[in-house]
Length: 302
Length: 319
Image (tube, rainbow over all chains, first blue to last red):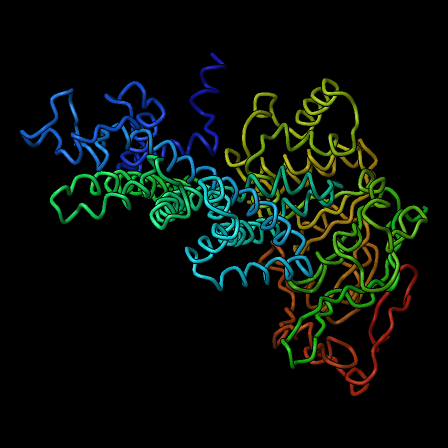
């Protein structure tokens, strides 16, 4: 019996947040959509009907299943691109790259943001000034331009694009982390830690960080969406992924010249793939923000 | 009895930067305060909100770096000690907070909150710590089952018990109780006060009890210091202070305590005006512009804290 009463009564913050999130329809839709996209990209070999890099020039720029003029050597769901490669297979494989770039770039931004944001917010004073003025300088550049410059300096390639986007996004993350820390560090339970004699590292990692995580999670989700967008943009501009990579932005850029010649699908579907990923992440981020904000919670329970 | 804590000319000024071209102002939260707390006693510190009593308590614990003056604990001046040097003293002196909602980390279970001080000081093994947590929780009146819960599942009074349990984890000698009951319902206040009282008897604790409620102070304290605008205006034995308040401010405070007897009305002294800003306290005696018996001298010369009767110190030109 006692174990049962425990279960019904105990509800941690995390459980409460999950409960709130599940009530949020658009947030759940975003999560499910994102999971589908991620799963299909990760399990691309299972779903892809063709080799994404096997060209077939005679079958180039053929429409997909909506038309009768399809190639005869199998199903081409979304048609073929300028080299006669199956667009659907390329989108699935390209997702691994584009989403991967987004995740890695976000991780870089998160790592930099946490280290600099935590130290700026917690220690304040001189350290805060140095870090934040540097961040202000970074902010003076338009985000994509900065990414372009960094990627251009580092050289071509998808790995450099990740680093470039990660660095470009880190100032925003620093600010988000810092503002959360500034609020938490004035709380009495942090002062109580000083009274106990806890060290700075312990206070930062065990008390300040876990309590300022909510805005970071929300912002990270939304940032992931823009990172994917920027990864595609860099690919589109030619500094990110290089041919023959199936990366979405690159595919979009390579196919755009055929838009007016009638082969609209070659550029449209990679664009839709980007759109779906970004929308799902935005929905997820908004849902998380609502779930994590105690003021939006139903009922008076705090 | 030997004093455990001796505070001498303690000052804590907060800088109040006015911007690039404005002069830096100082908020004198604690301005030249001296008193002694004897071993095993409960020393009350009373005064209205904003008079600096909490700051004073926290400065003694070095949660604020004192601007000037000395704090001697057991004969050792700790006022200039660094974080590292303070560590052994963190085990001996601790604090109970006023706000039972803000002073507990919402992401930790009660058990983690209570065992953390022992972890920080690397005391006992894991198992012993668990046992100690259980022992303390029972001590303060929480059940073993509640140890794995989170602070937001508790009521104010229970949370205050958790806060008290945390402060007992290191077997302290001296506890600053910073208005430990003013955020609680009256019925719960009595429980917490009695708990503090019992703990003191059993564990031989010394309290610095900060409060603005004289009834509470009267119940638990042995000696009382009255603070006004960063200064101690009167220190005396509880009985003496309530029987014979000397400073006009203390008199006004005393007269504000309601007497639960409708036939025995006393004259209430109602103070006019607001408490002046501690950034620009009035010259001379800080109280002179609200004092019913102010003299010319009061606005010029600052009174010293003098022993008017045995163990009764007052800072007023009347005496």
